[in-house]
Figure 1 (cartoon, rainbow, N blue to C red):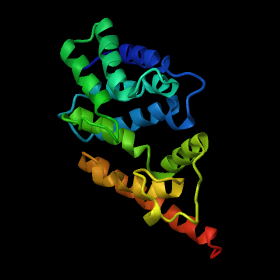
Figure 2 (cartoon, rainbow, N blue to C red):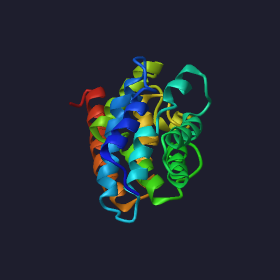
Figure 3 (cartoon, rainbow, N blue to C red):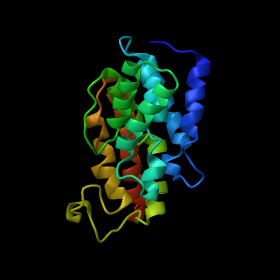
Length: 216
């Protein structure tokens, strides 16, 4: 399915309205724009994918973030999926397309089910995960860590002594969760890009360890 550029921009403008000035830099509207760009890069390599579904999935995937931050909803992906489908239907989008976008939104989250079942949902999920890697991913990690008060590094708490899933420090989070992202990618092209960005993160960790130990 194809849609006019004007309609796409209209839906994107509506998606933007769900973001307020208090949004975390790690999940603000600029994050959404980067995910959209990542998704456009990926979808170009998969001719069978519906580019319109991918586009709407990317721009709508985090519209529930503000509500989750405010404590109004438990899971922004669940709420966002329902809201996305309603929004698109209200603006005349076909039921099958709206449902396909809703699945992209519901399945994009790294840490929760369901797994993406369609090529469009896999692309949106990979596009979102790519933004957690590389230089941008590092910046987002430390921005979020600073917001929630997570220490950058704690020499008294090595990764093997940290029993949390995501890591108590940001450096352990990078090792434990972020560097695992390439193993969770759903598309071949996404995995290639993830591997490149993960290499950058690994190099950063190595440099950080040298500097923190006084070796460099």
